Structure formats: C-alpha cells, structure tokens
Amino acid sequence: MFIGVDLGGTTIKVGVVNGEGRILYQNARPTYAGRDYPLIIQDMIEQIEDAMDWAGVGLEAVKSIGIGVPGLAEVQTGNVIYCTNLSWFNIPLGREISQHFGKPVFVENDATVAALAEYVAGSTKGLKNSVFITLGTGVGGGVIINHKIYSGSHGAGSEIGHMIVGENFYNCNCGANGCLETFASATGLIKYVRKRLAERDVATNILRMANGRLEDIDAKIIFDGAKGGDALAQEAVHRMVKYLAIGIINIFNILDPERIAIGGGVSKVGDYLIDLLNQEVSKMTFCKEVTYGDIVLAELGNDAGIIGAAFLGENS
Amino acid sequence: MFIGVDLGGTTIKVGVVNGEGRILYQNARPTYAGRDYPLIIQDMIEQIEDAMDWAGVGLEAVKSIGIGVPGLAEVQTGNVIYCTNLSWFNIPLGREISQHFGKPVFVENDATVAALAEYVAGSTKGLKNSVFITLGTGVGGGVIINHKIYSGSHGAGSEIGHMIVGENFYNCNCGANGCLETFASATGLIKYVRKRLAERDVATNILRMANGRLEDIDAKIIFDGAKGGDALAQEAVHRMVKYLAIGIINIFNILDPERIAIGGGVSKVGDYLIDLLNQEVSKMTFCKEVTYGDIVLAELGNDAGIIGAAFLGENS
Image (cartoon, rainbow over the protein chains, first blue to last red):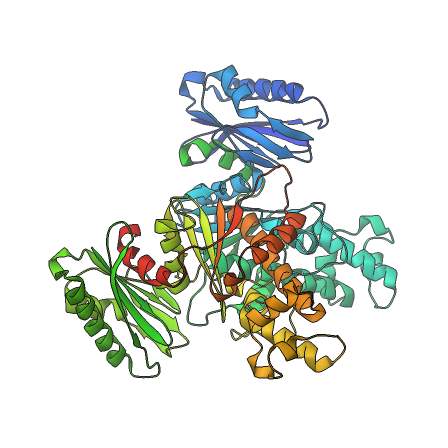
C-alpha cells in the first residue's frame, strides 16, 4: 500500500493507493499557500493520518509516501528546491514527513508525478520511453526513460514548458522570451486573444461568447469558437498548435519517445487538439523514414497527482 | 580489444582500440560515396583486416566491432535507416560485417559515437548524464543518460541539429524551418554573412579577409573578424551564439545534463565561443536556484569517431 500526496497551490490531496494504482480513499484540503511551511506540512501529516484511518490501512502496511509539488525537487533527498506558488525555497519536505512516519518519502515535480501515473496506470502504461505534457495555467512536463522517471542531474530536467520555441510578444515569468508555456498554456492562448481583440482588426464573436466580459474569456470559449469557425479563435488556436508542435518536434528530435501524452485542462478539448497537432507535427519531422511516436490524450485526469506520487518510491 | 570504424561521407577510418580507449593503429581510405553499398562494405572489411594485421591483433582477441555512420541507425540490429551523404536507406550494415567476421557488430549515428568517445576518454568522462554537440557542416548531437548512449525508441533521438529554435531566412535540408543546424552550423553562419554582404548595408572587412572571394569565406574568417571587431562578423557570431544558446537552454530544460561538450570544426575557435555561450545561456535559465551543467570544449577531435565506435558494444 502507498500514500500519494498531490500538493497544489490551492489544494492538498492525499490518497491511499494499492499496488495496481487504484485509489482506495482520498481526501482534500485547501493549501492556504503563503503560510509558513511547517503549518502546511502539519496539515499534510494530519491528512495522511486521516486518509489511512478512513481506508482502514495501518502504518505497517504502508511501503512509502510520495509527494508531488508544483516546483522542482530532488527526489532522493526529498528536498524542495523551488515552488513559486508556495514561495518555498529549499524546504526539507521529505525529511520532515519521513521523520514523522518513519517511512521512506519521495518528492517530485507534479508534472513528472503525473507522467509516472500515466506510465503506471494510464495512457503510456508500460512504455519504455514516454513524455507527458500538461497544458493548463502553465505548461509542465514529465519524462520516462527506460521505464524510469527522468529528472536530470539537478532535478531541473523535463521542464518542457520552458523550452524556447520562438519569439513571443511578452516574456515568460522565468524571465526568458519564447518559452513554450507562453504560447501553449491556457494563459498564453488567452493573452494572445486579448491582445488581438485590443488591436480591433479582426471580426470575431469571442467577446460575445464571453457575455461581453473580457475577463471571462477562457481556453474553452476560444476552442469552441475555433470549432465554430470564428476567425480570431482559429488564428489563436492555430498559433498555439504551431508552437506546441514545435515543442513536440523538439522532444521527438531529442528524446524520440514511443508516445507523447497530453493532459491538463486544455486537453479537455480532446481529439480536436490531437488532430490539429498531428497535422502540424507531420510537416516538421526530420526523418521521413522514421515512424515517430504517437500523440495521445492522457487518461487519468485529476487522479494522476495522487497515483503518480504514490508510486514514486517504486520507480526510484 | 575492439575495432572502431568511422564511416564518413568522404573517408572511412578504421582503428584498433584497447580497453582504455587508446588507438593502437588506424588507417583511412576514401569512401567514394555514391557506389553501391556492397562495394563500400567490402572496402571496410579489407580495411578492418588490414588494421588488425598492422596492429598484430588476431580476430580471437577482438571482442566487438562498432561503426559510426553519418545518419540514423538501429544499434541492436546494426541496420542503417538513413544516410543522406551515402544515399543509403535500410542497409543491413551490421549483419554483413558480422557475418564476415563472426563478431558482434554495433552501428550508431556518428555524433552519438563521438558522445560516447568523450564519455569513455574525453571531456565528459564518467559523467552520468551528458550531451555532446558537434558544430560543423551540420549540427549533430549525442546523448548519454545513466552512463549509456541514448538514441530513443526509433533511433531518431539526439538529433539536436533539428531542434527548432526560431525562424530562419532559409529552410533546413530536412524541410522544416528554424532548425538549430541552420543557425549554428558553419554552413548557417556563412550563409548569413553572404546574405548580409549582399544587402550592402553594413561596413565589414570580411570579404577582404577572404581575398575578395565570396566562396572562400569560412567560419574561421568570420570568427577571426568578430574577435578583431568587424561589425558584420560580430553580428553573425552573436546571432549564431544566440540560437545555439537557445538550443542549449532547451537541452538543460529537457535533459538537465551535468555537462554539455561542444566539438566539431567550429569548436576550434575555443574558449571565445564557450565564453560567449555562457553569457547568453545564463540570461535564459529557467530556475535561478539551480546550478545547471557546464559547457566545455570536447577533447578528442577527429579520434572520437574511432574511439566511440570501438566502445559501442561495451555500452550497449
């Protein structure tokens, strides 16, 4: 039996997970980010104890605890290097949880955790080499190489969202210009539409679809508009897909995985996105003699954070 | 004892290499690319026999034979998927050599082979995760992950040169636009200078440095010009370095290696290039809390092709 913790900027989710990757019980609490880290860790400990109680699982049955964090971590030491959302820098998260429970604790980036979940029980199950990309507020990534999580030599690998794929009209939060995240996240898509609306040179119904409220324009409205033939929505989606395709081509040319799985909120548009992506990617493959990996939708959705975290110890 | 073969577009080099990565004897013959592949393979066999004779090494002392090719190959089957320079497609190179000598034969992309050589006996010796980039007529790459060559699921990984890093004024041979190779190879650098010379809007001595002969402008002249303060040369070198830095940032953000080694003809400009690269790369790192890998010059030069090929079997 394993404990998986999904530490998010807004919610902490804890699950008790069996050896097949099934969640037996889970609970959730607000993170209240901004608090001192010992308070968040204390809440997490209580949540873990609560989850074990409700699942009827004693500590002796728990093999290890895994935690996914919205930032960078060293999986072996359990040290969180960096979490912007939580204002965490060099927090000994793994050590604190491990000292309390007397169990091995493993900590990883949340997108890497989701990649592991998809590998254990989802869209990339059992594949030797795969990449998971999550498209949401930002763009995250997780890499599986030789059946193992790959996070690089300093825990800074698989940061797919900060791959530079072009020049953009605004800089990324990280300070660089042209990060994939600024083109292919929901945030990037919406920013582009707002910019184009301000330019007032394209006919569009997008603002009407958001009931005239600029702040209510979201990725769903833009994709619905594109499907319905709205010119600006199609322009914005085409642009997003173009740069995401460049990111995917770069992954093919560096890692050549068997499969790339797309998850996160934006992936809810489904096959429409995958079809557009395949069209763009096929234009740019380097070697026409090679059958590259396929691009699919991720399968586990919100549960990926708990399931993947639970299996960190087994995959280390 | 190992045999290493460096099959190039113009020369075939064969070496007998000992377990420490030292070349005991080597020979070279023109490839005469364009011939039917059995003729090239026959020459290669004669060269291997010749090298063993001169080195005084019998077949019984040879553990395996490795071959680096200017294209894509499947290391396990020894099948060459694709070599533009040789017009080879799906050539059973490994099987033919193996049948002749009765020894295991391993075939890999030449840049990957050079990466292995640097790992065995050069600039990245013994490092867990490293990347080798060769800057020459094109841009090639090799990736070492967990002390092993990494070529991806279809032999198409580590094609660093076809990572898309921006928009360029001409398309890559592969058909895509913006490949790193079109910015950071000697060819790309020279094309840009010629284009700018044709525009006649910048003061420069480059044409004079090439004795007035447009076709004699090479990477060395351009780098010498940049060091000497020539405005166009500096512009061209700065542009090359900018896009190479983007490629390196993308490698850091995906693979986070301990070290990136730069080889190939262009790397002969030495620390001047490394210093410029470090300046650009440090501007674009995603996470300032992380110490990324360092960027160094490769050490083995032309011998890398033989040494790396010789060790393919040991690394598989």
